Length: 152
Image 1 (cartoon, one colour):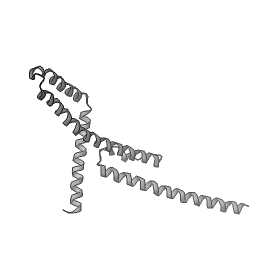
Image 2: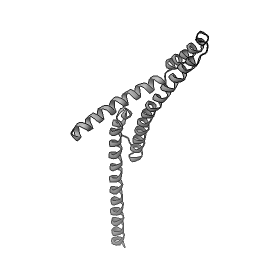
Image 3: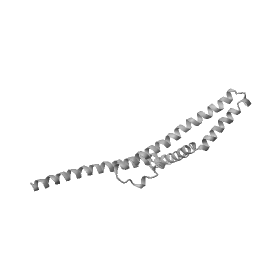
Image 4: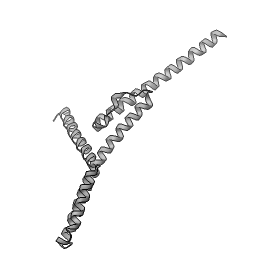
């Protein structure tokens, strides 16, 4: 398989997982999801006498909560990582310039690779601007000294 094809497939999988993680974390944070989960626990508790509070009855809730918790950790962490990366890029942009670019609005919906690319470009621009500022400072200092020599 060629490198471009692998990269495209990896990007496709990354986009799919990112979208799945984002939608799942949004759904998990809704009040209706909490009510549904609480309802399942109440239903489970009420059904206890029907099953004689057996080991199987206990195993159902233990297994269910373990599986949901295990999967949610990865989905929520992925969503959190993207949000953190997007916030960092936006903060870097605000630090770099006085007026930030509106094109950075909504970048939290990009893939991890796309966010990393934007971050690298912002850092490269900041380094280039800093080098330009230092050159300008040196030029202005040289001009000031030359003007002082002429004036004296």
